[in-house]
Length: 456
Ligand SMILES: Nc1ncnc2c1ncn2[C@@H]1O[C@H](COP(=O)(O)OP(=O)(O)O)[C@@H](O)[C@H]1O
Ligand SMILES: O=P(O)(O)O[C@H]1O[C@H](CO)[C@@H](O[C@H]2O[C@H](CO)[C@@H](O)[C@H](O)[C@H]2O)[C@H](O)[C@H]1O
Image (tube, rainbow, N blue to C red):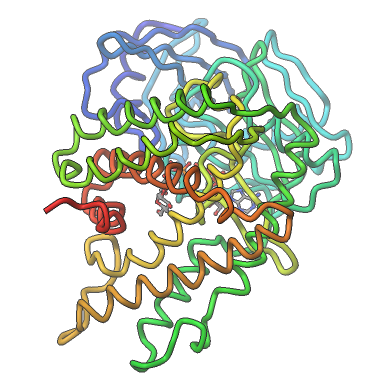
């Protein structure tokens, strides 16, 4: 590849939604791997770029399409004209070209290798399907093939086996009904580049279902409880709790487990304190809540009992679960974005996921109270105090249902109140930072649910 392509790529990549280093200058961009997948017209090359911004270096993968002439339908994903191997072509994001993406299915089905880039998949894969790029995602790019498969391509590569592939493969092998079946993957020298899975056509994600229920409750006549309205979500929350407990049992059976003793709990609490301090240094609005939160972390450090640890989801919320006609399916076992792989694969309390989902019920209940969060402006004459009370009621009702469902698996989260509270607060601290960085108008949502910790 020529240096001119590198210059072009630096300009192009900084404008991409999935580029994590937005707003900071690119100091250096190097093509560290360049593998030709086809030299036809259209041609396709798999590139890995090392992008340096100050001290930080991130690796991104691209599937670059090359055509002598770019048809109008691909104009919106043009990278620019390039020259290499004596050939002049127009480079573009190949994931938007159905003529190229079909080759990915074929290569997976045939188990093909291109240098260190290995395609693996079920031999019976359908290879005749057209792909559509899923537009909603931000950090990765997914292609849906004919409503049958979804291929998730990681844009930013983390060295090693991706926990999503590791966990989904292990759970599917055990016959779990709660994961989307894996059909194939692409890897580059041991690093997972993409995963092909069953597409859950017609399923709805938990966030949409929960927020629809919240809207119904808000629109219901005063005096009705959360359990009395048509869109009551509690039965679903309970099923989700039971499914979550089953997934945890499957994870405990498929991977190693361990125990946190007193010293480990002190370490865990120390980590929580550190994350809180970091959030305080970046988000001034956090200050009034700090002391109250620290007291809970201190209580965890003094807990005189052991707690079990195992592989967990790690970033569990309503946007990560989908309801099909007959079950809840859990997606995206990648752990917390931004954490190194080793940490994302580390054993943790399963209550961490329970805490994540409980926080998500708080989010669903409260996001209508923040007009900038995408909700409609509050209706004229709406009563803020009544809405706050309704948000609290909806959250409490569904949190209880979720925990009832989870308890059917044998562990009632309420029997581990100190750990659960600390984990919820740790997640809220993470969310405060996440919102301040990504969606400042949503910051009021995690802060709103910390009200009981606010110091005057
Ligand atoms: N197997 C699937 N079937 C149907 N839709 C899916 C599937 N996997 C992901 N999706 C859709 O894509 C969205 C994002 O998927 P996810 O794996 O969570 O990506 P990200 O890591 O970018 O958040 C989900 O909320 C869901 O709407
Ligand atoms: O789904 P991701 O792996 O990208 O997770 C990140 O983004 C989430 C936002 O989509 C964020 O979740 C927070 O907002 C959700 C509503 O949009 C809410 O349901 C979650 O409870 C809340 O944490 C997640 O924290 C972040 O890691």
